Structure formats: C-alpha cells, structure tokens
Image 1 (cartoon, rainbow, N blue to C red):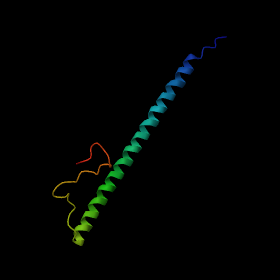
Image 2: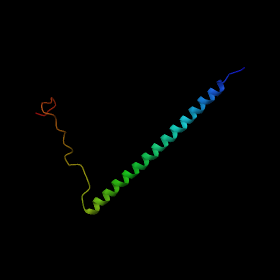
Image 3: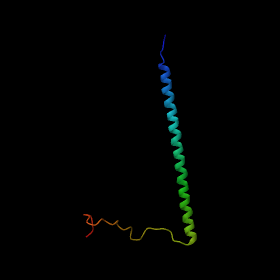
Length: 82
C-alpha cells in the first residue's frame, strides 16, 4: 500500500500559515483602528477643554517666561550646585 501523505502535511502547514497571517493582519488592523479612535477622542477632549477654559476667561496655558527650572538634585550628589 502507498501511505504517502506528505502532500496532506504540506497542505496543513500551508493552511496554518495562511490562517496565522490573516489572524495577525486582522489583529494589527483592529489595534490600528483602536489607536486612531483613541487619538481622535483625546484630541477632541483637549480642544473642548481649551474652548471651555477660554469661555470661562482663563488665560491660555503657556510655559514660564524664564523657562523651566532645573530639577532638584539629591543631597550630597556630585552634581549638586555649590
């Protein structure tokens, strides 16, 4: 009897690879769509908060005139300012 089923194993491996690629593609697409939805929601929320702040009369948020201060250094640090 001829029990050569190598073609069936090849077909099974090929189908597994095809399904795995399709699965990963759908997963990547869903993650990308989720990212775009969250990015848009955050952007709209920031714009809405800015409009509400302007409506209430608060000034726009700007950095300090002299720039930001340096972070504090730990006591006894070799990089501590004299």
